[in-house]
Length: 198
Length: 198
Image (cartoon, rainbow over all chains, first blue to last red; front, side, top):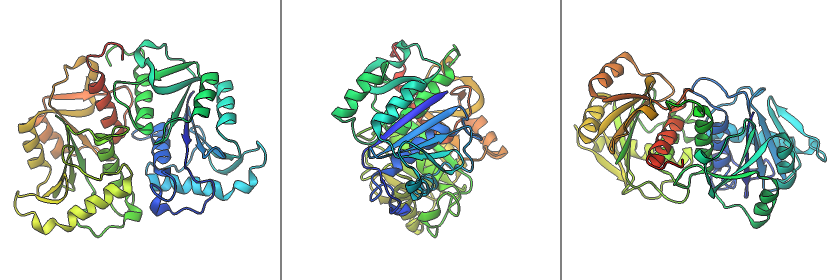
């Protein structure tokens, strides 16, 4: 399974944001929505063997499961609506117990540290970072958990957490990419791994 | 220079669409908007040496120039607003004469055939296609013009035009990707070309 964790530093923690302003009033939720699209969409199907978690301002985590997602659309607005719908159910997320507001979407009241710890138990944590080793020099694991940041850099606290949980720091190429573009490239590297012709 | 042409089969040709429904009422303009973002955005800058053309329902072409683009944002809605603004100036695009509604954005009253012919004079046309040669087997030109289709397949007429203008048909990997994800991967392949470590 391929996993992605995207840390949203200014993401909403309540459903009172406008779908007309996800890039402004909703704390750059547009970035997180594009990450979900990059994580799951192929041309005419969904990547079922993918899990993607969005950490919302260190307060909530929305987990998307490719194996059970239904009616996900690739545009930002409809994904934002799905996150808004999850936040409307936030009172049902008690302690570490998740709520399941729509097929394949889960919301829990946990922040970055617990999300990273949970993911580290499920796979090999890889931090995508400009100072990391080049992707081509790394033996890609079969259970990667890529950790990315939204439009902001990782905070010092996040860096410390990652230094404890991440097995590798990896750089995808010579350019610094948006988080969603990095997810697309990571998929590409995994898709083509073992295919000499690509 | 890297160029991208994205053919939008159901894209609007008038500015009377709602920014709240680009994935529905505006003929999947969301796909074209994400293509513009993929073509131009790096983490904290714009790729200045890129040109991206969107063909709107074989009637208009919007050309984005990285060297002169200003205030482009990565979210779908703001890019859709830029296209809407260009279409509001469509009466100023007469014959093949372009209008320049905002910095780095040009609108002309030309369809797929003229756009492809113009681009073929500027660079090496490459059709991204599932039946193409693997990207790794192709010597990448320094002036590629990648031609992609939106959520629909190329029509027979477009296939014929491409067979006349395209030097190569290239496949990026074993999976079929959305057009915007294909642009991100094409950039990645060009970015890392010549860097053995990637």
